[in-house]
Image (tube, rainbow, N blue to C red; front, side, top):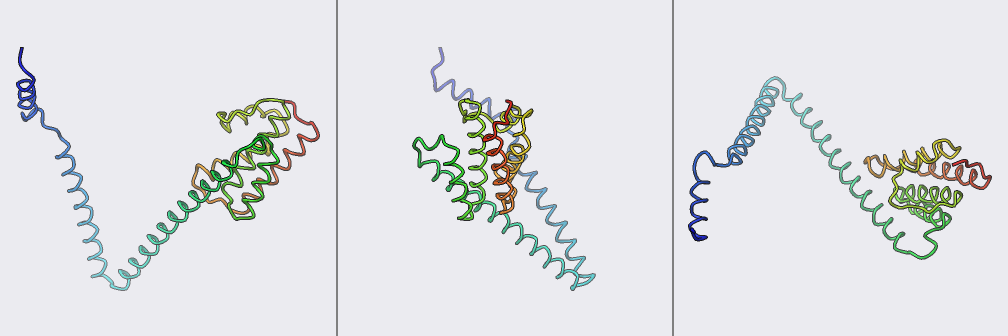
Length: 207
């Protein structure tokens, strides 16, 4: 039986043959060449534009700089907002205790977050408070693993569906969709939560 060194040498000799060469280096070279071709074409276009009219050239450069600056600002602002919201949410959830199961606790946290201009966690807290109210009214156990869409299906044929759907739409689009969360979004969520609270207090749920 061949020893380990002989086997490794044979495998190395086989892999070094032209038929077994990896294509990664060649593909990377093609990609680099494509980028160079693209930049060369852009430079030629800008040279032609400058020859046609320097004023138009500089105006276009200024517009592109403004667009690039706006994109950078938007990305930085979105990241800052998301990180701030996640830190605030984690800080509130780490408080723990039996109060976690009380919808009024989460509603109060939503008001505190709203007062601190932490709009993203505020809408999450309001959705959580609303779901807790609905589940307590049904004497059901709140399941953290359930999705928002599952809860929507559960309450589809009840009066709670319209405000709950609004809460889910705003929360999902702002939290997961990357849309900026505004003061008006939180106010709409407060209104939806109040509608659910009123329905629960009146006993108008049929789920």
